[in-house]
Amino acid sequence: MTDKFPDDQDVKAVRRSLRIERAVIGAVLHGYRADNHGFNAAITDLWVTEQASAVDINVALFWALSRLPRIGEEPELLLDRLAVLYGVSDDD
Image (cartoon, rainbow, N blue to C red; front, side, top):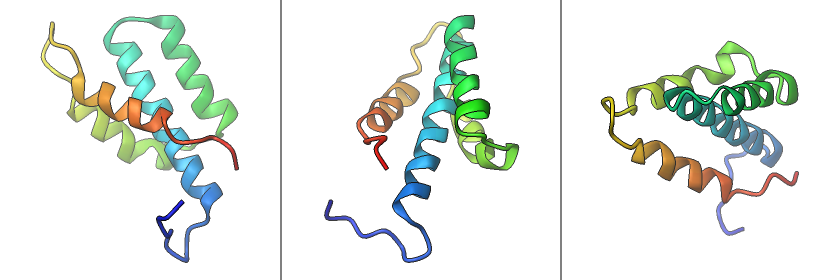
């Protein structure tokens, strides 16, 4: 990895925040498509696996909700961001 993280953030914390962002965007997308199973899986990732608090999810949630398209359109911005986040390794 050639990117240098700021000194006040370690790699584990950055990866955790990216996993939280991925779960939040997944929950918003599954909710948009009325997919209860996917929505529940994303919420489980947030609160059980990552033990994310409301403070942890606020920025990602507001970002994702503000990029939802009008009814009937594909949420391309959210899908693109989710594809990028799945490209980041979960290994600590």
